[in-house]
Amino acid sequence: MSKTNRVRRWVVPNKRASNYADERKAKVHQRGPKEGKELTDFEAGVRTGYLQCQNDHAGIYKFKKAIGEGKSVAEARKISKEIGGKKK
Image (cartoon, rainbow, N blue to C red; front, side, top):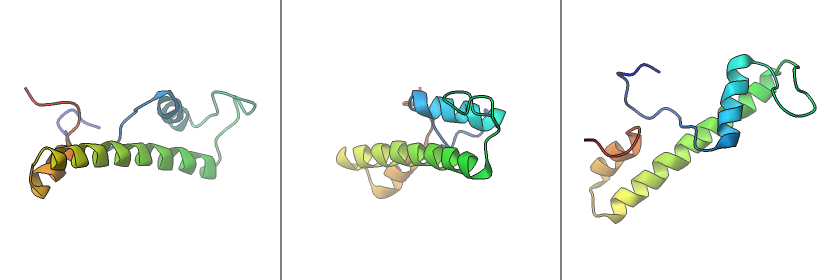
């Protein structure tokens, strides 16, 4: 993702997601009994789906938090798509 594109696409919220992202990039299992073997299309898809799910959870959390703070739906949508913390 380019540094100029500041709209949330996906997030690496924890170690599993970080490991999945690394494995997807390398296209090879990096841990466990299949270590060193190539990822199948299904396994790569599972990792992609997990990472997208983590992004959805992060976005919905920010959306609900903004609504709880009294922001409008449009403002909450914008906040939920921002990457990182508050703007300076």
